[in-house]
Image (cartoon, rainbow, N blue to C red; front, top):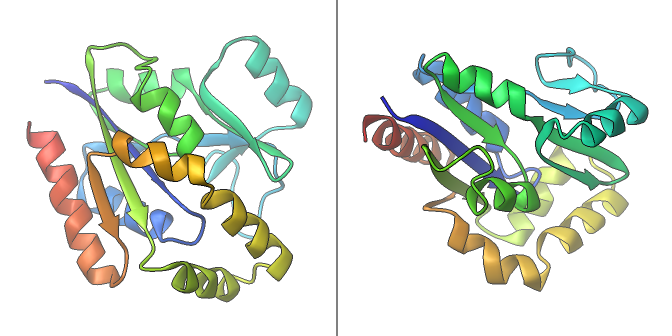
Amino acid sequence: MSKNVIVISGYSGVGKSTLIKHILNTFRIVKLSVSCTTRQPRPGEKNGREYYFLTRKEFEQQINADAFLEYTECFGNYYGTLKKEVKCILNNGFTCVLDIEFAGAYNVLEKHILGDDIKYTGILIEPPSIDVLKDRLIGRGETMENIDTRLSMSYLPQHLKNYKEMYAYVIVNHKLSTSKQQIIDVVKAVIEQ
């Protein structure tokens, strides 16, 4: 049985978390790698479930120990994927899903950090338009300043030149029920190959 890593990326507010939960509820053989972050937990979040919440010092110690598959700093906080977390999922016979942004996805999809014996698949979730994405972020309670910062960073020309080449599948999340079926079809195809 081949080892699969599925990288799912998309802009904040595009619906990644909802679609990933749908995958996890549909396939028992798929596990999400829990990422680390230095940001504060939001109400209802639990350490080890949504993220491993680390101090900045703890995160930087993990960087120095080369513990991360990928990491980035965004909006003043670190985010990263632990190598041991992904390896544990794969070694236990599961397909591993990573919810990571574009720079991290590049490190995983293009550099094959875990080795060439793993099948890497990228799925990009896109909004129907920037206006729809902005409305979704407003609906999540984001401040206009934060929204403007996120949108200006997400749609930089250098992203548009490169990132679509890394993703074998692109799902435009216009209608959630359609997007759920599309992502299930993609994951099923990956697992069965």
